[in-house]
Image (tube, rainbow, N blue to C red):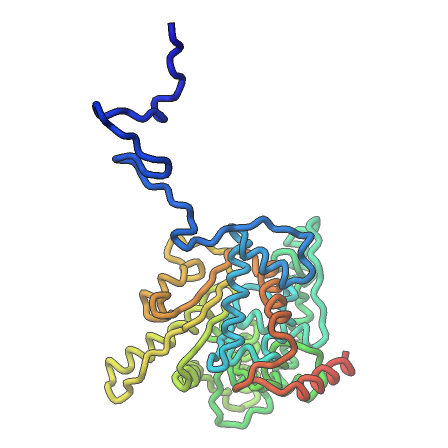
Amino acid sequence: MARKSKVPASGRRRSSGPGHTPPSDGEPLSGQRHLADGHSDHLQPVRSLDLSQVESVDDLVRAMAATSFGGRTVGEAADILELMVRDEGCKVVLTLSGAMTIAKQGLIICEMIERGWVQAIVSTGALMCHGLVETAGMLHFKADPTMPDEVLFEKGYNRVYDTIELEQNLDDTEKLMARVLGAIPEGETMRSHKVNRLIGRHLDAGGAGRGPLLSAYRHDVPVYVPAFTDSELGLDYGTNNHRRRLAGKPPVAYDPFLDLEDFRQRVDAHETWGLFTIGGGVPRNWAQQVAPYIDILGKRLPQMRRPLRRYKYAVRICPEPAHWGGLSGCDYSESVSWGKIVPRSEGGRWAEVKADATIAWPLVVKAVMERVGEGRKGGAGAKGAGTQARDRARHARSS
């Protein structure tokens, strides 16, 4: 007896009757899916990360862009930052939250400022305070995991995850702040970006080392701290006003709406903006809300009607997931719905890296540094190469 075919039922071609001609190879069977090859839909193939071909950080990040998961987003973030940097008409806002300066990422901020990649900064006050501590020559320390937190308190060791900020550092910073605030003319109303500029000027005059507020001062980049009172700098400001009252002097007035209007006017003055965000929180939202603010002013006050000023480019490095409605984790597509980000359908470009910024941020910035070389982007906030060289020489002498 002839042996029956062992072809699985799913692979057999059934005849529909006498004279039926089976479909030729490659033709889909009636009722079956057509299996595409990826190329026909312009999909990009992924590639194995070949470290033997990597000779620079840029090589590594470009290769990561062709892989998957978090590695791909790091590569995509570098591509978007490069677009911002190379677009001469684009102004960039850097927003900062999290303990990035005590985590020793402050010189990355300086590098972005000094290269003319950033035209405004929105930050937490704590981040700027810890950066000021370092710029003024004070030290941070690794936390000893065997030392209990109640012992840390008794010793004046303020723990930020795995790093220590000395209470003595903060006391010394308050003395520095007292000198800065003491020079403010009586009757002047302050705002965060002006306080930060005065701190930068004080550091510059004192020959301090390299740091975010010093670099921002030298390159005329405003630093806004929307939640100024939620920081050591804000507490120092409050302490100074109590000291003035006890001495029979009027306190130094403070109006946060002066920050809001200054930032609005800067954004309104240019058509194309990019956003580079570390973390989220108040700095991220405060920087993004300028777009709907300009829009609603025009709707509610017709005499103030202006063109939309949504961010065309955006990069976000933040490990926060998108859940429970938290702003830090929400993605840029949600921001599109609020009129803060240009949608991709209209030319918007963005990348989101859900990773620890102390890992991803250095890779992204260094890769773009290698791509664009030593040339500085022009425009407000940038200085020429000669000025950059003098700044670096001055820093070397003071170090």
